[in-house]
Length: 135
Image (cartoon, rainbow, N blue to C red):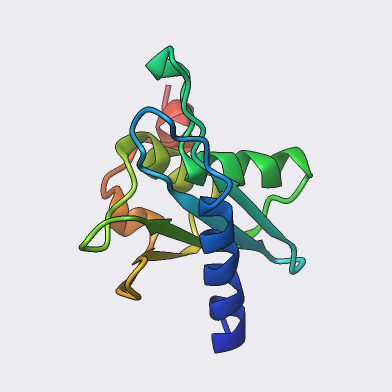
């Protein structure tokens, strides 16, 4: 992935953070992903007064791409308003492992700290389709 693509993806994640709906936690997160076809899908976290109905930015972006028939996810950038680079929650790790198993994951904060990882590194020994096929 070229540096320009990474910078474009990071910019899209930061822009998506500005669209987050986080009136309860005030913890706005943005995510943006790049597909093999070159399309970028983004999403901000969306909270709800009934807390379990909230959706993380990572899943908003991934589900948007899948809803648009984009299945080959090459990279996913996630920006959080934290001092250190934050890691996705367990639910997002599980979804990333299944929907974007080969994606380059770029985690960053608003001060420019960046960490590169992968879904497998974020969720080692994760549960997936192969376990269901073992029945």
